[in-house]
Image (cartoon, rainbow, N blue to C red):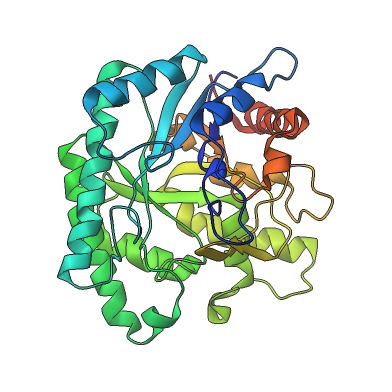
Length: 341
């Protein structure tokens, strides 16, 4: 099986990292590429990377020449670039998708910048497939709950405009299903937004095994829980099928991950699905089996690669070659079970 291609994410070197008390320093793009390139299992290596378009890895306002230099560096490691993460959050380029017109304007500007960078990478040849990832950029659900219908409508409005920008650039957006983002914090609320936008050719869903596991538990939306706390194996897979049947038709980007049923955060990125090592003894997911629910008919939805998300792994863990070999081995097993030629 040659597809899906196997990618590693670069943002674990950035997300939750920083200079604040208790935070670990960021890991450079160069170092993340080196660590990814060093991984190998029985002759198989990672095929590419997915990439966060913000400092210190990338200045989203970088010149075309600077971006081509980055593309050359990535290509020199034998990697393609796949999906890109738009800098939509407050403190980067963007702002809340459910904010006022100025905030929404910043959000759309971030999407434009991401589409421009995607175009440079595409023309260079380092990027041949992948999406641009977004979310509501409204952290937490308390503000959303003050006017859930109105705030969902605002997010839908912003996402529609963003999808038009992407379509004009020949790109597709994927909204990340994660419990920390307002209006996207449960499988049902996420579905409401996807259906509200109603532009599946331009805006779809990004499924992450760690985050969508917490969708099942109804962590930030108990009313939408599909299993109780002490679920049986049969109850779990029945619920998992229910969730994936709803969201899979929208899924155009997929993250392989593990979760131990808890939430985790660092810095401003708090209370989100905890990503665990692939072989974590407390992991709740049969990664290979769970992946199959999302990857059914994946090629028909345009999915060309899958990506491991090790968001908020400690730096010590990220620096160990065994970490990446175990991850790569798991991804190979996912492809062997559910891939295509």
